[in-house]
Amino acid sequence: MNINYIIGVVGAIVVFLFGCIASVTIQPTFSISFNPGNLINFFDPASILITIGCTIFIVVASFPGSMLKNMPKHVKIILNNKLFDPTSYIDQLVELAQIARKNGLLSMEEKANEQTDPFFKQAIMLIVDANDQDKVRGILENDIECMSARHDAVAAMYDKASSVAPAFGMVGTLVGLINMLKSMNLEDGAGDLGSSMGTALVTTLYGCILAHMIFGPIAQLLRNRDSEEILCKQIIVEGVMAIQAGENPKSLRERLLTYMAQKQREMGGEEKAAA
Image 1: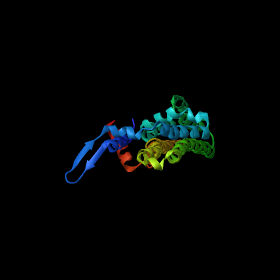
Image 2 (image 1 turned 120 degrees about the horizontal axis):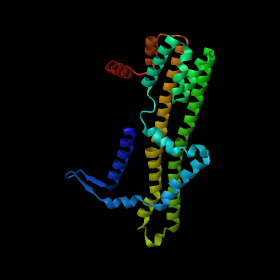
Image 3 (image 1 turned 180 degrees about the vertical axis):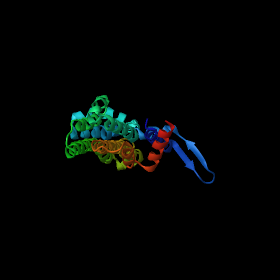
Protein backbone atom coordinates (compact mmCIF):
# COMPACT_ATOMS: atom_id res chain seq x y z
CA MET A 1 0.00 0.00 0.00
CA ASN A 2 1.30 3.44 -0.96
CA ILE A 3 1.08 5.08 2.46
CA ASN A 4 2.81 8.27 1.28
CA TYR A 5 0.05 8.98 -1.24
CA ILE A 6 -2.71 8.40 1.29
CA ILE A 7 -0.98 10.51 3.96
CA GLY A 8 -0.29 13.28 1.45
CA VAL A 9 -3.81 13.54 0.04
CA VAL A 10 -5.61 13.07 3.36
CA GLY A 11 -3.22 15.50 5.05
CA ALA A 12 -3.80 18.13 2.35
CA ILE A 13 -7.58 17.78 2.73
CA VAL A 14 -7.39 18.02 6.53
CA VAL A 15 -5.14 21.10 6.41
CA PHE A 16 -7.44 22.69 3.83
CA LEU A 17 -10.53 22.09 5.97
CA PHE A 18 -8.67 23.35 9.03
CA GLY A 19 -7.83 26.56 7.18
CA CYS A 20 -11.48 26.95 6.17
CA ILE A 21 -12.90 26.75 9.69
CA ALA A 22 -10.04 28.06 11.85
CA SER A 23 -9.41 31.64 12.87
CA VAL A 24 -6.00 32.38 14.41
CA THR A 25 -5.38 35.48 16.52
CA ILE A 26 -1.81 36.40 17.50
CA GLN A 27 -2.25 39.73 19.29
CA PRO A 28 -2.80 40.56 22.08
CA THR A 29 -2.74 36.83 22.95
CA PHE A 30 -2.43 33.77 20.76
CA SER A 31 -5.74 31.99 20.28
CA ILE A 32 -7.44 29.68 17.81
CA SER A 33 -11.18 29.55 17.27
CA PHE A 34 -13.16 27.23 15.05
CA ASN A 35 -16.33 27.93 13.15
CA PRO A 36 -17.49 24.78 11.30
CA GLY A 37 -20.30 26.82 9.80
CA ASN A 38 -17.72 28.44 7.49
CA LEU A 39 -17.64 25.25 5.42
CA ILE A 40 -21.02 26.11 3.89
CA ASN A 41 -19.34 29.18 2.34
CA PHE A 42 -17.25 26.84 0.18
CA PHE A 43 -20.17 24.81 -1.14
CA ASP A 44 -21.85 25.98 -4.32
CA PRO A 45 -23.74 23.53 -6.60
CA ALA A 46 -23.36 25.68 -9.72
CA SER A 47 -19.60 25.89 -9.21
CA ILE A 48 -19.36 22.12 -8.76
CA LEU A 49 -21.35 21.57 -11.95
CA ILE A 50 -19.21 23.93 -14.03
CA THR A 51 -15.78 22.92 -12.72
CA ILE A 52 -16.09 19.19 -12.13
CA GLY A 53 -18.68 18.48 -14.80
CA CYS A 54 -16.89 20.34 -17.60
CA THR A 55 -13.50 18.87 -16.64
CA ILE A 56 -14.87 15.34 -16.79
CA PHE A 57 -16.56 15.85 -20.15
CA ILE A 58 -13.50 17.48 -21.74
CA VAL A 59 -11.36 14.52 -20.62
CA VAL A 60 -13.99 12.16 -22.05
CA ALA A 61 -13.90 14.08 -25.32
CA SER A 62 -10.09 14.02 -25.48
CA PHE A 63 -9.29 10.35 -24.81
CA PRO A 64 -10.58 6.97 -26.03
CA GLY A 65 -13.01 4.93 -23.99
CA SER A 66 -10.52 2.08 -23.63
CA MET A 67 -8.27 4.41 -21.62
CA LEU A 68 -11.08 5.96 -19.58
CA LYS A 69 -12.50 2.62 -18.44
CA ASN A 70 -9.10 1.70 -16.96
CA MET A 71 -9.14 4.60 -14.46
CA PRO A 72 -9.95 2.31 -11.48
CA LYS A 73 -6.96 0.20 -12.55
CA HIS A 74 -4.77 3.31 -12.53
CA VAL A 75 -5.74 4.04 -8.93
CA LYS A 76 -4.91 0.47 -7.99
CA ILE A 77 -1.49 0.83 -9.62
CA ILE A 78 -0.56 4.00 -7.73
CA LEU A 79 -1.70 2.50 -4.41
CA ASN A 80 0.46 -0.61 -4.85
CA ASN A 81 4.06 0.07 -3.85
CA LYS A 82 5.34 -3.44 -4.57
CA LEU A 83 4.42 -3.96 -8.20
CA PHE A 84 8.00 -3.86 -9.43
CA ASP A 85 10.84 -5.22 -7.30
CA PRO A 86 14.22 -5.19 -9.10
CA THR A 87 15.83 -7.53 -6.56
CA SER A 88 13.32 -10.30 -7.28
CA TYR A 89 14.09 -10.10 -11.01
CA ILE A 90 17.83 -10.18 -10.31
CA ASP A 91 17.40 -13.28 -8.14
CA GLN A 92 15.39 -15.02 -10.85
CA LEU A 93 17.90 -14.12 -13.55
CA VAL A 94 20.83 -15.42 -11.46
CA GLU A 95 18.90 -18.65 -10.90
CA LEU A 96 18.29 -18.94 -14.64
CA ALA A 97 21.98 -18.32 -15.32
CA GLN A 98 22.86 -21.19 -13.01
CA ILE A 99 20.36 -23.49 -14.77
CA ALA A 100 21.67 -22.45 -18.20
CA ARG A 101 25.30 -23.12 -17.23
CA LYS A 102 24.46 -26.58 -15.91
CA ASN A 103 21.88 -27.81 -18.42
CA GLY A 104 21.95 -25.43 -21.38
CA LEU A 105 19.54 -22.75 -22.60
CA LEU A 106 16.82 -25.22 -23.57
CA SER A 107 16.43 -26.21 -19.92
CA MET A 108 15.00 -22.74 -19.15
CA GLU A 109 11.80 -23.35 -21.11
CA GLU A 110 10.08 -24.85 -18.08
CA LYS A 111 10.99 -21.81 -16.00
CA ALA A 112 9.69 -19.54 -18.75
CA ASN A 113 6.29 -21.24 -18.64
CA GLU A 114 6.11 -20.57 -14.90
CA GLN A 115 6.49 -16.82 -15.37
CA THR A 116 3.49 -14.57 -14.73
CA ASP A 117 5.26 -11.56 -16.27
CA PRO A 118 4.66 -11.78 -20.07
CA PHE A 119 7.74 -9.69 -20.85
CA PHE A 120 10.01 -11.91 -18.76
CA LYS A 121 8.55 -15.02 -20.35
CA GLN A 122 9.02 -13.59 -23.86
CA ALA A 123 12.63 -12.66 -23.08
CA ILE A 124 13.46 -16.16 -21.88
CA MET A 125 11.77 -17.85 -24.83
CA LEU A 126 13.62 -15.64 -27.30
CA ILE A 127 16.98 -16.94 -26.12
CA VAL A 128 15.69 -20.50 -25.66
CA ASP A 129 14.73 -20.43 -29.35
CA ALA A 130 18.34 -19.49 -30.19
CA ASN A 131 17.58 -16.12 -31.76
CA ASP A 132 20.40 -13.77 -32.67
CA GLN A 133 21.46 -11.48 -29.80
CA ASP A 134 20.85 -8.28 -31.78
CA LYS A 135 17.40 -9.50 -32.73
CA VAL A 136 16.52 -10.38 -29.13
CA ARG A 137 17.71 -7.01 -27.82
CA GLY A 138 15.90 -5.15 -30.59
CA ILE A 139 12.58 -6.89 -29.91
CA LEU A 140 12.76 -6.37 -26.15
CA GLU A 141 13.88 -2.74 -26.30
CA ASN A 142 11.14 -1.93 -28.81
CA ASP A 143 8.65 -3.54 -26.42
CA ILE A 144 9.90 -1.29 -23.61
CA GLU A 145 9.66 1.86 -25.76
CA CYS A 146 6.10 1.06 -26.84
CA MET A 147 5.07 0.28 -23.27
CA SER A 148 6.53 3.58 -22.02
CA ALA A 149 4.67 5.47 -24.76
CA ARG A 150 1.39 3.87 -23.67
CA HIS A 151 2.07 4.76 -20.04
CA ASP A 152 2.92 8.33 -20.98
CA ALA A 153 -0.41 8.61 -22.83
CA VAL A 154 -2.24 7.49 -19.69
CA ALA A 155 -0.38 10.00 -17.51
CA ALA A 156 -1.16 12.66 -20.13
CA MET A 157 -4.85 12.06 -19.51
CA TYR A 158 -4.43 13.16 -15.89
CA ASP A 159 -2.17 16.02 -16.97
CA LYS A 160 -5.00 17.14 -19.25
CA ALA A 161 -7.49 17.01 -16.40
CA SER A 162 -5.02 18.87 -14.18
CA SER A 163 -4.71 21.69 -16.72
CA VAL A 164 -8.40 21.82 -17.65
CA ALA A 165 -9.77 21.99 -14.08
CA PRO A 166 -8.26 25.42 -13.18
CA ALA A 167 -9.30 26.73 -16.59
CA PHE A 168 -12.92 25.82 -15.95
CA GLY A 169 -12.54 27.23 -12.45
CA MET A 170 -11.81 30.56 -14.09
CA VAL A 171 -14.70 30.06 -16.49
CA GLY A 172 -17.00 29.50 -13.52
CA THR A 173 -15.63 32.62 -11.87
CA LEU A 174 -16.37 34.65 -15.00
CA VAL A 175 -19.88 33.23 -15.17
CA GLY A 176 -20.43 34.18 -11.54
CA LEU A 177 -19.07 37.69 -12.03
CA ILE A 178 -21.19 38.25 -15.13
CA ASN A 179 -24.34 37.14 -13.31
CA MET A 180 -23.40 39.28 -10.32
CA LEU A 181 -22.87 42.41 -12.42
CA LYS A 182 -26.02 41.82 -14.45
CA SER A 183 -28.17 41.55 -11.32
CA MET A 184 -26.44 44.33 -9.34
CA ASN A 185 -28.70 47.25 -8.44
CA LEU A 186 -26.58 50.22 -7.35
CA GLU A 187 -29.64 52.19 -6.19
CA ASP A 188 -30.33 49.60 -3.48
CA GLY A 189 -26.67 49.49 -2.35
CA ALA A 190 -24.05 46.80 -2.70
CA GLY A 191 -24.80 44.75 0.40
CA ASP A 192 -24.78 41.45 -1.52
CA LEU A 193 -21.60 42.20 -3.43
CA GLY A 194 -19.30 40.33 -1.01
CA SER A 195 -21.34 37.12 -0.97
CA SER A 196 -21.82 37.20 -4.73
CA MET A 197 -18.09 37.70 -5.30
CA GLY A 198 -17.34 34.81 -2.93
CA THR A 199 -19.64 32.49 -4.87
CA ALA A 200 -17.94 33.50 -8.11
CA LEU A 201 -14.48 32.69 -6.72
CA VAL A 202 -15.42 29.27 -5.33
CA THR A 203 -15.12 27.76 -8.81
CA THR A 204 -11.44 28.78 -8.99
CA LEU A 205 -10.92 27.07 -5.64
CA TYR A 206 -12.51 23.85 -6.94
CA GLY A 207 -10.31 23.94 -10.04
CA CYS A 208 -7.12 24.28 -7.97
CA ILE A 209 -8.16 21.46 -5.64
CA LEU A 210 -8.88 19.11 -8.55
CA ALA A 211 -5.63 19.97 -10.31
CA HIS A 212 -3.19 19.89 -7.40
CA MET A 213 -4.78 17.48 -4.91
CA ILE A 214 -6.36 14.90 -7.22
CA PHE A 215 -5.14 14.74 -10.82
CA GLY A 216 -1.58 16.07 -10.41
CA PRO A 217 -0.42 13.44 -7.87
CA ILE A 218 -2.00 10.63 -9.90
CA ALA A 219 -0.13 11.68 -13.06
CA GLN A 220 3.18 11.92 -11.18
CA LEU A 221 2.75 8.54 -9.49
CA LEU A 222 1.86 6.86 -12.79
CA ARG A 223 5.11 8.20 -14.25
CA ASN A 224 6.98 6.92 -11.20
CA ARG A 225 5.50 3.45 -11.74
CA ASP A 226 6.50 3.65 -15.39
CA SER A 227 10.10 4.39 -14.40
CA GLU A 228 10.08 1.46 -11.97
CA GLU A 229 8.74 -0.92 -14.62
CA ILE A 230 11.25 0.29 -17.21
CA LEU A 231 14.08 -0.33 -14.74
CA CYS A 232 12.89 -3.90 -14.11
CA LYS A 233 12.58 -4.58 -17.82
CA GLN A 234 16.04 -3.16 -18.53
CA ILE A 235 17.39 -5.53 -15.89
CA ILE A 236 15.60 -8.41 -17.64
CA VAL A 237 17.06 -7.44 -21.02
CA GLU A 238 20.62 -7.21 -19.70
CA GLY A 239 20.13 -10.40 -17.73
CA VAL A 240 18.93 -12.57 -20.60
CA MET A 241 21.60 -11.13 -22.88
CA ALA A 242 24.26 -12.12 -20.35
CA ILE A 243 22.72 -15.58 -19.90
CA GLN A 244 22.74 -16.11 -23.66
CA ALA A 245 26.40 -15.10 -23.69
CA GLY A 246 27.16 -17.63 -20.92
CA GLU A 247 28.13 -15.13 -18.24
CA ASN A 248 29.00 -16.36 -14.75
CA PRO A 249 26.00 -16.08 -12.34
CA LYS A 250 28.02 -14.22 -9.69
CA SER A 251 29.32 -11.75 -12.24
CA LEU A 252 25.78 -11.36 -13.59
CA ARG A 253 24.42 -10.44 -10.15
CA GLU A 254 27.14 -7.81 -9.68
CA ARG A 255 26.40 -6.30 -13.07
CA LEU A 256 22.62 -6.17 -12.56
CA LEU A 257 22.96 -4.65 -9.09
CA THR A 258 24.54 -1.58 -10.69
CA TYR A 259 21.05 -0.63 -11.93
CA MET A 260 20.00 -0.06 -8.32
CA ALA A 261 20.89 2.61 -5.77
CA GLN A 262 23.68 1.76 -3.33
CA LYS A 263 21.27 1.45 -0.40
CA GLN A 264 19.08 -0.97 -2.33
CA ARG A 265 22.13 -3.07 -3.20
CA GLU A 266 23.16 -3.25 0.45
CA MET A 267 19.64 -4.18 1.54
CA GLY A 268 19.54 -6.91 -1.08
CA GLY A 269 22.88 -8.24 0.14
CA GLU A 270 21.70 -8.30 3.74
CA GLU A 271 18.56 -10.21 2.79
CA LYS A 272 20.66 -12.78 0.92
CA ALA A 273 22.99 -13.18 3.89
CA ALA A 274 20.04 -13.71 6.23
CA ALA A 275 18.58 -16.32 3.88
